[in-house]
Image (cartoon, rainbow, N blue to C red):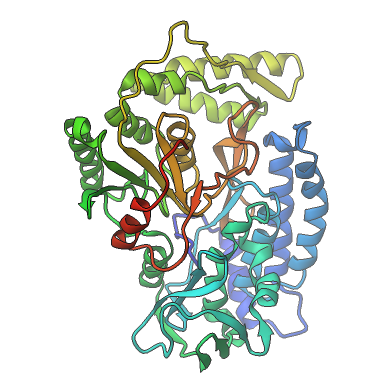
Length: 484
């Protein structure tokens, strides 16, 4: 569910296990349990040997979960009887690290998925709300869910969702995971919820089977603007710059954002006197360079570089054979393509080799901030600039927020952002089953402007209701003037 299938090597032994699982008796040992336990131990060992967390003196919680979480996850794994049980056991462990870059990606996923034709998210107060409903679902958008099958929504989340999908260090992101209660793989149909009490009354859920790709597309659109387009347009005197992501589905999308930045640059003189909204709702990240380019288009390069250079990007890299191999591959690719990254990755490789020779688990890469010797340039903004956020803003979107909120005249509005850990730059390891791949960060920031799992809280919080452009424009025009 929400998992993109990819190419995975599945050995003949694993295929035999999968076939055997369909023919086993209820008393026979479960191959899914054995496979989950083996993969969990591999996750533990890979993170222990390659991730900065286990040797990070600033994060004792990470080390504790590495060991204690494994015990919890192995107990869960021993009960696995289906493929979905297997995936939950692995997610239970990786989710507990509270590190968004520790991820298990599964190479196979059901082609079809069961759902009752609804998508559940959170309203502005964090209550479970139906944000999308199929015409025949028997419910309406905007209804709040109180309980299902006699169990409160909160209790259902604690049992079925929180341990597997929600980073508990980011409370505002919890309700965006609520829709997992209403998704079921073919091997989980016995656990489907049947009846829910809503703010408008009690309803019988109308489950149906849909193509997984289509259901996931609907979920992405409803929860975070997954199909939203890059655009810049005026609404009732307010200019909205919609930035749903900093990654791209196609070359055409790349060209569209490039064209938007060109339009922003050409109209910058007028826009600086107007009300401009950078709308990053649902922006899960991508390439941070796009945020830099957008800022330069409105503020100019001197201002943006001044802020960028004030950041201390010093970090430590975990020294291991697997990570050295990964960095060597990145460096070789940079040299082959003659990119500007060669200098940086050479610095990283040299630091790792020196630390390896000295028997040190972490290699320091010093990238201190620079202190400007001249006063800042004049503030080019005489109008108002807003950064419109929600809990979908993460990764490179947070980098964009780091930059924008330190430029003159920017005020954050909307809802709190997501947050991310200080562990970055991912390496991968295939798990023994051949069914899944573990991703993990190789580096840890030491002086990032945001602490580990720290989010941005808006100066003015959205008062509630659908966030249409018209409603947003009315609300923003009524906000007090003043600094961020």
